[in-house]
Image 1: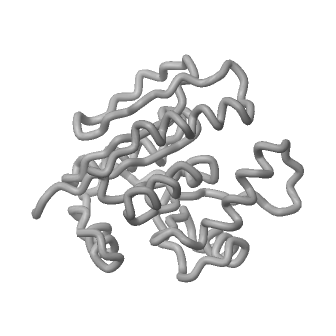
Image 2 (image 1 turned 45 degrees about the horizontal axis):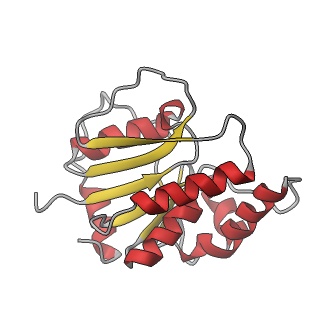
Length: 195
């Protein structure tokens, strides 16, 4: 294995409550990646353990979700983002915005890992409409988009105008199956200029 690739990933929610984020973090660590994972400190502690290669940064938020709380979260992530990251990952539309800003600031690749998208006809509060507009405008600029299944990938590719088909990665991979060594992800990253 060559040098370690360092990733910074952002989710607006508590990462402990998302098995794909927990399992994905463990798999990345198992295959030689290091990860800074930014998420909200909601006050709920689920006793989820992460390997030492994964540092979880819990950003204290407001008691209730609000657009001011989201702006404060984004500002905190931007202050903690690092040029040492080889790439930035935005989990869902709320994680995409700070990840896109960091990827632009540090001129690094952007990965958008989404399980859904914010449909244009879905009624939202002002903050949600701003995030949806950002997703509609910038999701297609990601160097790689990861989705959990092919059908959903087709819909997301069409609705968000993706330039190339998304990479399909199952939501909750079986962790007891012998791993492939991370070579598929490394190859995908190499093809997109991340060494």
